[in-house]
Every structure is written in C-alpha cells, then in structure tokens.
Length: 257
Image (cartoon, rainbow, N blue to C red):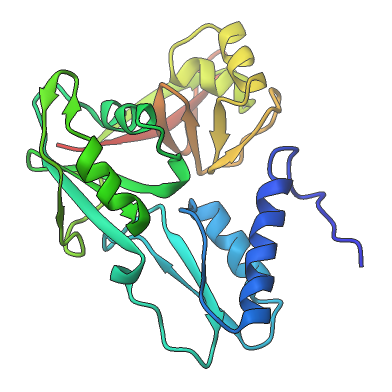
C-alpha cells in the first residue's frame, strides 16, 4: 500500500519515514528502539505510527517532570517499561548573569552537537539544566567548559524534580490586519512585512511546532508561533477589533526568572 504523505510538508516526509522505520525495527526485533528528542507534534505523529502495530507501545521521556521535548522508547508490550536513567542525563552548571537560553544552545551547537540529541534547556534559580542523551553526557562534561568567556563546570544532577515551565509570563495585545501568517509575524515581532515574508520562505517560522513556508497561511487560534532568533509567542485569541477593522490579538510570552 502506498502511504499518503499529503498531510506533511516537503521537509517532514524524511522525518516521518525515519520514525516509521524505527517502529518497524522495534516490531521485528522485539526490543527497545529509541528516537531522537521530539517536539509535541512529532510525539503525536510517532504515537500514531505505533498505534498501527498490534502489541507495540511507546514511552516518552524528557527528564523534567513537565518536559516539552522528549525521546520515545518503542517496544513490544510484553517488555518492561523503560527507565529514564537508561537513556537520558541531566547536566547542570552555575549560570553567569549575562548568559541567556540562546547562548547555551548556541554554545552546544558550536561544539558540533546535534540539536536532536538535546532536550529542554531550563534556567532556574541561577542554574542551567540540560536534558541530553546518555551517549552525549561524557563528551559535554569534558568539552563544554566555557560560555561567553565564562569558565563553567558541567556536572550530572537529578533533574526529575525540576520544572521546565517558564515562571514569568508577560501578556500583551497586538493589532494585526488579518490572521495571515506574514501579517502576524510582522506585527507580533515588530518587523517589516517583507522581512517576515522572507523569514517564512526560508523556513525560519514554525506554527504549532511545524515549519511552514506558506506566507498567506491563515492561523487558527490558539496557536504557538516561533521564529528562529526571535523566540516564541502564544497567541490565545482575538480579543477585539479596532475602528478600522483590524484585529486585536491576546498574546503571551514565557520567560525564565
């Protein structure tokens, strides 16, 4: 049977195929198969693939008690449930005052680390916590020693009681001419419309975790919009309209204290 990929965009078919092969491998070998870290959208896709196989199940693990990014362990239902510590580690270091979330991620990428091998990065009470695959843990402890000219010491800790939820939420109302994606990106991030269009066409914008190249895509609310280099915002609802017929959007942005 030819599989229908019509619900996927052009850059998602390879990821879907890779996940399908992992599920099939677990089914044929009757053993545990792990994925890379998946965002909530791909977690749902993976579960839908698993559900097509009789006697198969999956467990999603992210270290933190409310993690967003998680790996999936795929296995036959007669096997024992997998343990988080067999697959993931939580690494931590004291966070210098001038270091931000993006600095941590940027430093990890500069060390040649694949983003898919990194889970949530949590900043909490002057410390940074990073969920990583066990296979990467020793390498990072040895090599991740400096960030923005600050020397750091990375160590393994227990992250199961750490919350990944951002503690500070700011609320704002933004006026947009329509619910078109380019209009929303331009208004929410306060950039020119043509710049917003170019960013979307370059694949720098995601809607509800999905990369989209559709400039005139109509956004259904509530929605999560993220723009590479600009962060993410949650758009909850249309809260009203202006006398000129523009829409007022209620948005919120979460930040770590």
